[in-house]
Length: 284
Image 1: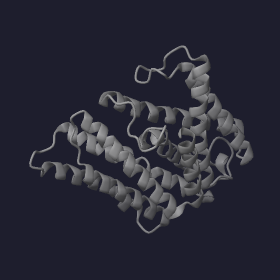
Image 2: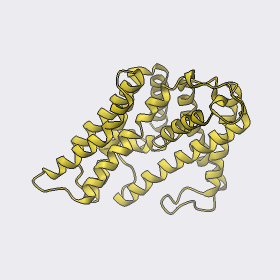
Image 3: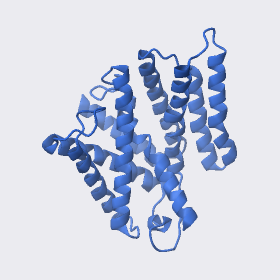
C-alpha cells in the first residue's frame, strides 16, 4: 500500500507539473487545502482555536491571484496586497467571535496563511518563470540557467528533493550514528551529508543535461540549496507534530501519513529559489 501511494503521488505530481497552467494551480490549491486542515488539526490538539474557514479561503485566494499575476491579468502590487489584506481579515474574524481569539489563535491562523498559502504559491511563480529572464553575461548569474525554463526548474527541484530524501534515508540507515536534531531523532548528520550529496550529484547531472554554464558550480550550489530547504521544511513539521504529540499529520495517504507529511519538504524551496534567481538577474 505504501508503494502504491508513493507511485500515485509521484505520477500525479509529474502530470500536473507538465500540464502547468490552471491544472498545476488547482493541484497546488487542493494540496494546500488538505494540508492546512491537517495543520489546524495539529494546532487544535494543543488547545489552539484557529480561524480555519477564513484562513482556508484566504490561502485559496492567494494561490489563485498568484496565477493571475503570472498571466498578466493582475498587477503585482494587487497580488502582493492579498497577504496583508487576508491577515487583517483573519484577525478581524477572530475578534468578532463570541469568545475572542487568543495570541495563539491569531499566530496559528496567520502562520497557516503564510506556511500553506503564501509559500506554496511560489511554485506557481517558479513554474511560470521563462527564459525571458535569460542573460548572456558570464559568471555565476542568471545566465548560468540560460537554457532552462520554469518547467525545468520545477521538475528538477522536485526531483532533487526526492533524491535528497532517498539519500538521507539510506545513508542515514546504513551509516548514521550522530543525531542531527532532538526534534527528529531518526535523522542523522551522516544522513544529511548523504542527502546533500545525492542532491548535488543529480543537480550537476541536470546542469550538464540542460547545458547550463558553470555546471559543476551551479550543480553544487543548487543541490545544497534544495536539500537544505527540504530539510528545514521536514524539521519544521516534525517540530509541530512533536508539540501536538502525534506521529503523522493525518491518514490521507495509506503508508505515508497525511498530505502535510508528504509536502513538508516542498514548502520552503520555491520562494528561496525564485528570489535567488531574481536577485541574480538584478545584479547581472
